[in-house]
Length: 283
Image (cartoon, rainbow, N blue to C red; front, side, top):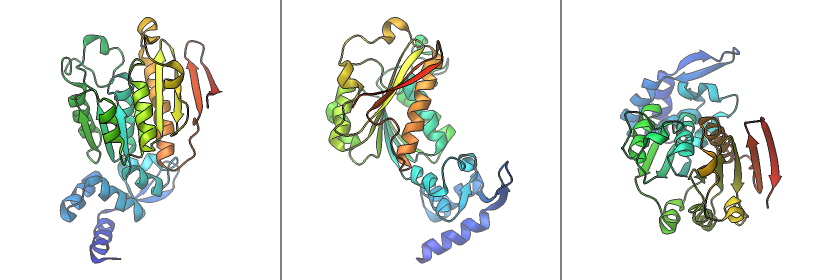
């Protein structure tokens, strides 16, 4: 081990505390202020501090309740991942919230919209304080509040195909959190060109779908094309938005951890009006 790594290991162990999960399993815990101390002393990004602690078997306390789902190495892998999120409205606000809380270390996102009063029914980032402000600005503020280890780059514009190509280079995964249909084919093409898995979703009323499109596969954007979206006539209630975004994140986090994509070449279709969930093959 190089001297700097040895010094980091000694210092992180000195700051760690003994802790136990609710089921009684013991672990070494790094308090939130301990991570800030290590970042300052060693000149490291907080996400890398947290990842190095996990490498050493020390759990940043904010991730302790993740550990029955993700191993220490998988949590470190999330911190070293980069995800592209296109859209910061209904789906995108919930996706951002979950990815930040779960510890995805780098997120690049974009949305050119301002918040309107009609967003207040479902969009997590919208509030009386953010009306008429850009969704990108609200996203930056929210991410800092939730998890200062996350490095969020939020662009207050609508990306075109060339922008998507550029930002997807070197990414680990893309999340389609756009409304409507018109821009989804461009994102699917850009993700395929970059060799990046794409997790997509859409809702209409109390129903919706989630799918994973691997490079070269057919996706929902291929099937549905462009034009009027069903959500325009059926509405966008909060429950369906939150469910779709949660399903997207569950799939995305698994892929980032190296799990086989559950929805590759498939669509998971849900209807909350009658509480049905069905999966259909599309590729």
